Image (cartoon, protein in one colour):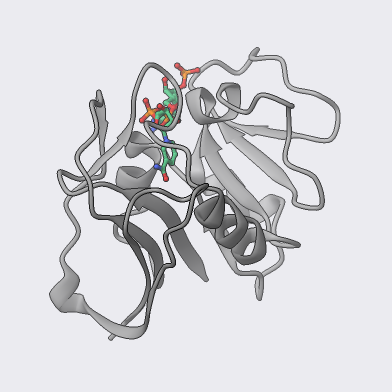
Length: 162
Ligand SMILES: NC(=O)c1ccc[n+]([C@@H]2O[C@H](COP(=O)([O-])OP(=O)(O)OC[C@H]3O[C@@H](n4cnc5c(N)ncnc54)[C@H](OP(=O)(O)O)[C@@H]3O)[C@@H](O)[C@H]2O)c1
């Protein structure tokens, strides 16, 4: 199955200047817990946004139109989403982690949404794509706790395809 994992602000902003617009460790923790031990699929720019290279304990699959794009040995490069099945098991939960072009590419395939809504407005240049939430059911909603490290109000939501 295909799941989307992302965080967006009040205006559906997800990125700025090649990185996240916010610092929210609680969301990083949820992202880690959600994606751990699952294959993660991302666009080339999102891959390049990781400060420490590929994310550990997850098969990192990068999508680029450039078949010569160089990735570390542990990372899989694909140029066509049809190639995904060569690298993931049929029963795997494949975590598509963005950015917007990649969410768009898998829009018709997605079964589950792991969304963090951040109740704040940030400057940004990348937005989440429009999703038809009528086709999904909210199965979990958890208010986040703000503290000195997590300054913005946020909610974790999980939606399953009807
Ligand atoms: N808030 C969040 O949850 C979240 C999640 C992910 C990313 N982000 C942020 O979003 C920004 C990056 O996202 P982005 O949308 O600009 O870029 P992206 O989706 O990460 O990467 C775009 C690249 O993916 C490749 N690509 C896209 N569509 C393709 C297709 N149909 N076939 C083959 N390759 C394709 C292309 O690579 P080539 O140019 O190499 O061909 C394209 O330039 C950053 O600021 C990042 O921090 C935020």
